[in-house]
Image (cartoon, rainbow, N blue to C red; front, side, top):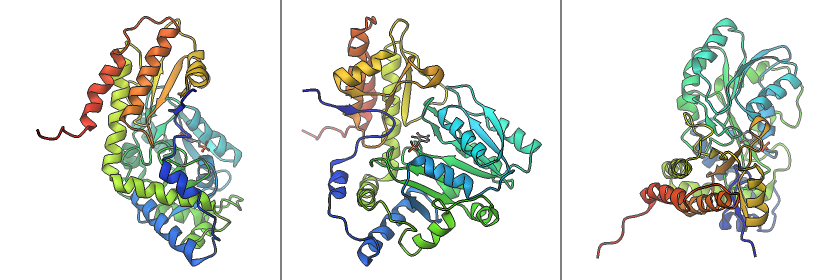
Length: 385
Ligand SMILES: *Cc1c(COP(=O)(O)O)cnc(C)c1O
C-alpha cells in the first residue's frame, strides 16, 4: 500500500466533513431550502473577502473568474497593465489580448515581487489605464506580491485594481474594502478546501460603474445578471449544487477555526517549510517575498527534476514541480487549505528521504527538526501536572 498525501498548490485536500456534505442527495436549486443555504453561504463569503459587496459564486474554475473580471469591466481597445511575474501573471496578459485590449506589461523577474513604484510609473505615463491585473500570490514562482501597496496607488486613480487571489484569499488577510481592491477573485480548490469547480468574485462600487460602461461581448460570465440573481439568493444558471453544499461546510470550518487563526496557521506552516529547506542547505525560489501558500525550493545540483514524479508515483507524496524556466529545477511544497503541522513534518521527511535516494548528501532529520522547532509554536502548552 502507498498512502497518498496531496501537497500541491491546488487542487488541495478536502476535509472529511466537506466530502460528506457533498455526498448528500441533491435538492432542487429553485427552492426556499436551497435559497436559505445559498444566502448563508454568500454571507460567509463576504466575511472571508471582508467586503460589503456581493461575492458572486460562479460554476467555473478560477480562470473563469479571471475572464469575468476582464470582460465585465472593459471595452475593446482599452488599455490595461499586467503584472507578469509567472505563469498566472502571463495568463492575465493572454485573457486581455483575447478581448482586444491594449496590454502594457511589467515583467517581474521570477522569484521576486513586483515593485509598486514600477506600477505607479506606468499609471502616470498612461492615466487612461483601465485595469491593473495582478496576482496576490503568484503560485508558479511562490511569490507574494504587495497588494496593499499597489492598492494605495490605484485607489487615487481612475484605474481598477484586479487581484487574482486564488492562492491568497483564505491564506492571508486581504481585506478587500479596507485595502481598496476593486475586483477580488478566488477559486474553490486552493485555500477553500473544496474540489475544483467554483470561482468567486467581488467588485467594488468603482468596478460596478465600469461594468455599466463595458462593451465587451459576454453571456455566461455576465456579472450584472449574476448579481441580480444572487441578490435573490439564487444563481443565473444551474449552480454546482453539491459543491455549494461543500462550500457551506468549508466556510463553517474556517470560521470555527477563526480567520485570524487560519492566517496564522498558514504563516506558521510556511515558515516551518522554509526553515526546513534552509536547514538542509537548499535555496528558496522566492527568498525575499515568499508566499504563505506554497514554498518553492531549488533542487540541489545533481538532483534531477524527476524527483518530484518519483515521490508522487512511487512514494505517495504529491508536490508540484516547476513550470517553464523552472521546469525540472524546483519542487513546490504547498501548505494551503486543509493542511496541518504534521503534513509539513511528512513533507520535510519525504523531501529529505527522496533527496537521499537521489544521492544528495544531507543529514536525515535536519530539515524535519528545523520545521518542528517552528511548528511547536502552534501546539498547545502541556497540561499542568
Ligand atoms: C490555480 C491558480 C489559477 C488557476 O485557476 P484554475 O482554477 O486552474 O482556472 C489562477 N491563478 C492562480 C494564482 C492560481 O494559483
